[in-house]
Image 1 (cartoon, rainbow, N blue to C red):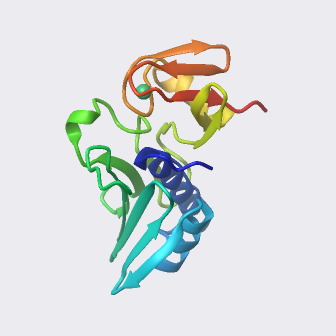
Image 2: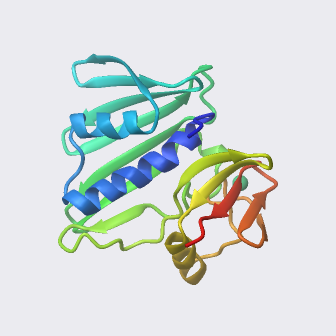
Length: 193
Ligand SMILES: [Zn+2]
């Protein structure tokens, strides 16, 4: 997997944390979060008083376990902050659910939600109660694509608007199983099966 920009880490990371919650019924601990981040291709840089730093060639991640909240900041290794994103996972007791969301640190860059909707998992049934559009990124001769599962696509098509780019909120143009965004330059591809 290629981690070129913060979003190429934030979206699969949010998805992995959501899957962890649905499997385990809890937020990942520091060690479990470390395994998830390493699984996404990041190297651990340093660990100090609960703060952990991870890096790949183009992206740096800072993980802050804050009691009942998991916070991971994804920043370009160039130090550029305009495309930095924060992945936040927490247990919302009032809502009776676990929530995972991706927040842009610069609101002006994004008109919609990154991933369309936050992940909302019922604390008791562990069922997914929202329709997030998340996946991982793959590169081919046509560019970089957010690869989503068919199930994710079907829910998105039924509950939302598949012409809105899940990465930037721009307009998507579909050609068969692939969509292209003029605004951010990323594409979306649906995995068959
Ligand atoms: Zn876009």
